[in-house]
Length: 188
Image (cartoon, rainbow, N blue to C red):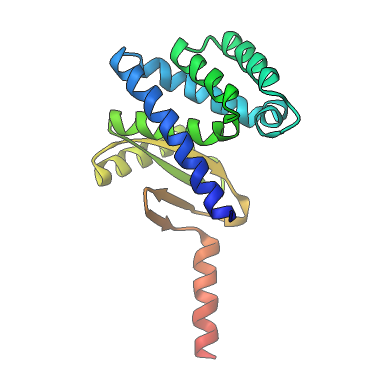
């Protein structure tokens, strides 16, 4: 099995679990709670090397994973549907797709709410005013409510790179200097 096939299979497995959780939460009117819990679970994955090790390492038995995930679900006050799904994933040795599950759940919730996330990389941190203006501009262009996912990359020198769906706008100084350098090579 190639790496591409295993990634595709992971997304497929996570997609089925995510769709089931999403549909049940939607029926029960719990999408807002699911959105919060999904973000919290994703943050836990990002912050905890122990959690990432637990879901990925084959040295933990199904029972070890189920106990740990049960304790985590209780501590995080996860909804019964999400907690039960995580338990099922542990019993089926599918916890390794947890990062894809949280990403897919976030996508489904955003689509349901008419939201889109823009990934913004800037040379310096955006002020609240700049972030609000950027959100407003992107919302006008996309016709959807925009959430910003921002990060700072000082190597850009100035400006920013905005990714909204499949579109990318690169207005960074680094990109402009690179373009100028290429033009200068062609002339010389």
